[in-house]
Image (cartoon, rainbow, N blue to C red; front, side, top):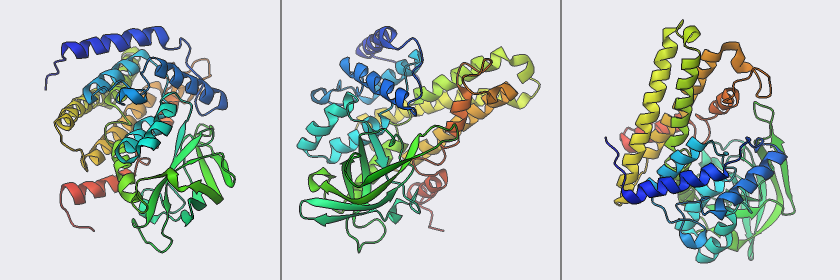
Length: 387
């Protein structure tokens, strides 16, 4: 496959590269899993929005640029090349926003999208519960209708960014007599409502990247429901497609990591070559990152012609999560004991391999465990019977 960009696409690349060269902070921002870092990343989202770069694929009237998927891939390549900060509002911009555009009312789009684009509202995801992780059909958290409100009771857990986020989008059981994927509704709610208790969950690095959320008779207006009552499963599956497919994890993220891995190998080649399997893993990492990029460009072109991604998103999710693990495990093998140093240590790697390594462990779990994704592939793509 050979990529040939049009002249408008080359101008688009030059524009975003020039803007990022002027705007990307010279010093890395603190982790957005700290209160200080969360505020700094929120401000960066606003800075991106000032140039209409926070959500390039959105329509222009809600803060985007109306870019197509190829332009989005170009933007991501330049974004990761520049070393720009991670996106603190990725749950909103990359997951909820496309769902809102497909299922939301005009009023909901006008209410939520502009504030999301500027970082004024940061969103957390409220799907997982104790006993309902990858199996979202087991959700028990209830949203019982009471006039023009829902009364929510129950618990959510592993809610990313929820410690300091402003809003939550979640799946709730609005029909208490329903079972499995029936009777679920997709509800949007602010996290400062009376009756909500948020308890941070520490990650492997000690920072509160997640939270568990408890609801005690929390009243949410019915107008905050996305789509029809009881249609939450269908809507959530669309969101899951965005999460596992193209938008949440762009190929540029992994291409950049692969480039850093190659450089790390070259800097430590004498010691790394003592184990020939390390060189093989570096080569495989680079080839896999390039293959994923080319496959994504092909998918984007197919979608632009009216195609759909469907269950194929599960193959994407398995591929990028296992690639991320391979790259970071290889980096840690190259670094040896040095790789275990915390970022603030004097001799620590400048590329943050330890944080990346720890985060990569979660890749096969979040967005639906890879075991569940393999079941989806077997049943929906290969037509195999349920075991």
